[in-house]
Amino acid sequence: MARAVKRPFRYRFYPTDGQAAELARTFGCVRLVYNMALQARTQAWTLRQERVTYEATSAMLTG
Image 1 (cartoon, rainbow, N blue to C red):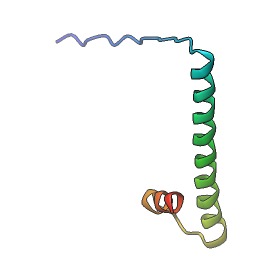
Image 2 (image 1 turned 180 degrees about the vertical axis):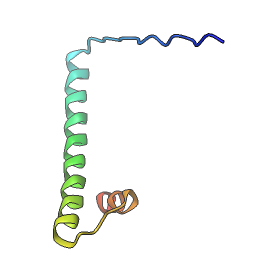
Image 3 (image 1 turned 90 degrees about the vertical axis):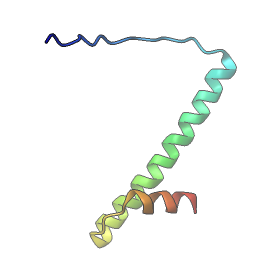
Image 4 (image 1 turned 180 degrees about the horizontal axis):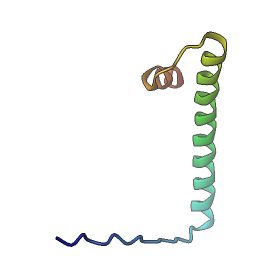
C-alpha cells in the first residue's frame, strides 16, 4: 500500500500596523510569562533539587 506524501504549506500574511502592534504586544506578554515560569522552575531545581510540575507552574502564574 502506497503511503501518502505529506507536503508542507507555507503561509504568509501582511498585518496592518494595528495588527502588527497587537501581535508584538501579545508575543511580548508570552515571552514575559514563559521567562517567569522558567525562572521559577530553575530556582526550584537549583536551590532545592525540586521538580516543578506544569500544574504547579500554572497555579503559580495565575496566582
